[in-house]
Length: 155
Picture 1 (cartoon, rainbow, N blue to C red):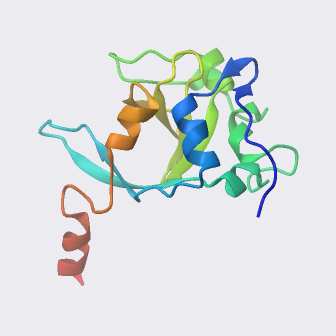
Picture 2 (cartoon, rainbow, N blue to C red):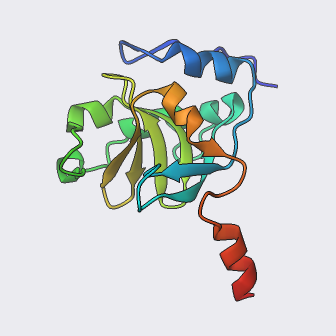
């Protein structure tokens, strides 16, 4: 068991209380994230919201904890892209708090406004929720679009 205390601030900005409380309680999270809810593009993607222990591991670098993924100096923040309706600056991404992973990237909290995003390896970032509570409401135990059924049918 990890006895480290989850920080309540990171790089001078506060982490959302709902997030800190959930992680400190050891809550587990469903493994599917609903994308584009209530639109014709609604679908699910597999997600892993990291446990407290995993946040403190050094999986991606010997020199920083997993939650500090975006402090890496090998990321070219000038290549950042978002959808036209979303705004995220390179500075906001550099100070982001990573909380989990998806197939092609990482889930993070923009500590400037509390919104949740996915960062993909091609430097595209996609906003998924305005705050941690909204993010939790998008998590489900099963995919909303029947992805598991499609995989079973193909086999």
